[in-house]
Length: 136
Image (cartoon, rainbow, N blue to C red; front, side, top):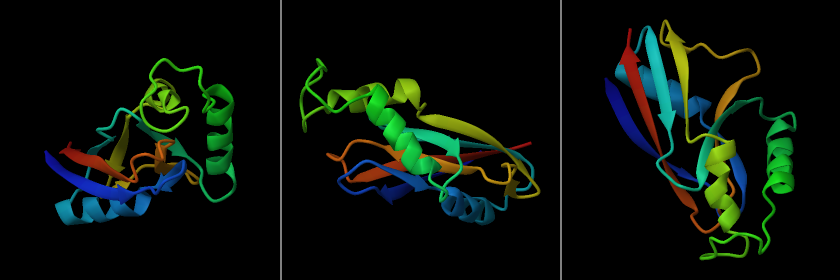
């Protein structure tokens, strides 16, 4: 198995970051052919989503998360910025991992799909993402 930890700067506000280019570069570096790519974010307050980006879906996802997980004082987990407790609930809604088939060195994603880091926690502006490729 090939595995690499990459660093992603998410900034100090909620965001969706497309990882697809970094994933393609990782697969090239490893010489991947056919197998399985696993993407994992080792943080308690971020997730990985496979969605369309650039057409508003990434913003729609953040809006939906705000509706379901408002940044207010309802949360028992209270350290950090106001409403930070919701960030710790996020991985129950947006899992911290995904797996994607790789065929001939390319992620077998649908036409409009991208693999994205979802981060609602402005307290941590830098994230790590572990990319692992298991050859088939």
